[in-house]
Amino acid sequence: MGAHDLDASVERIAADIAAMETRGAAAIADAAADALRQQAEHSDAETPDAFRAELRAAARRLLETRPTAVSLPNALRYVLQRMNGDSVETLRRNTVAGAEEFRTRLDRAQADLGRVGANRLRDGDRIMTHCHSTDVLACVETAREQGKEVSAIVKETRPRNQGRLTAERLVELGVDVTLIVDSAARRYLNDVDHVLVGADAIAADGSVINKIGTSGLAVNARDRGTPIVVAAQTIKLDPDTMTGNLVEIETRDESEVIDRPDREAIGDISVENPAFDVTPPRYVDAIVTERGQFPPESIVALMRELFGEAVADPWIESRPSTEFGGDEQ
Image (cartoon, rainbow, N blue to C red; front, side, top):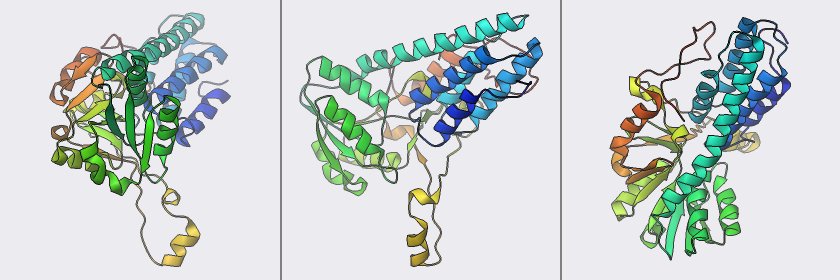
């Protein structure tokens, strides 16, 4: 491989992330770290500079696949900031170790989050979900392991119907599931004890970026007096927002909403397909992480603890090596 040649595994993993074959923030972060590991292991770079350039190029390729999945750059930061050494073999060894360490912590984080989130669930509770979140499932799974009976109202979550995957997983956990169309949510909010959703990103002010429809659900839940709880590992925290950067909202292909023949039959219309929306912190009761449960307004303190005040972008070409500001993701 040349200085910017990518290992085939990096291209495959990037394609799977872009096509949403790999979905969910934890799965995306795990795949990204594994891609850097494979790039490092398979690299035939002859100089340290060439090795670093290859790894940065691989990181940029991965980064472009999902602009709103902040777990992705957080995973890349973790691994690349451990890419240090004076020889190719030392760089390779440290990069691989960093990737494996990240994946181990990631695996532990979800179990820890599940224990924190399960504490909010009582025996006999009914939850409402939106989209598909492995962090939400971890909370329910732990509650079930504790012997709690839990039932769920599951929104289908158009246009990709990720709610059906949530329904399938909850049934496997022994949860009584009722699947509803998105527009029926308000009708059932009086019948649930918690709205439990995941997050693709959480901003420094406690705003929650999640699958489109989350913000409307949160507004309705607040009106009904139903608590809304966000389950999100700390890899979902977006450190760039501490410096005032806005989270980019991904717009996906219109074919997810309507196929071309139906679109042409209707006539001259525009089709918009935003993948995410932003829920203001005033509509969120709690954010559950592997580090504990937090009110949204205090999440910035956790960000500073994890990332420091300065946020690095180690995938930028020819960037001098620096130490990572925080000690874990």
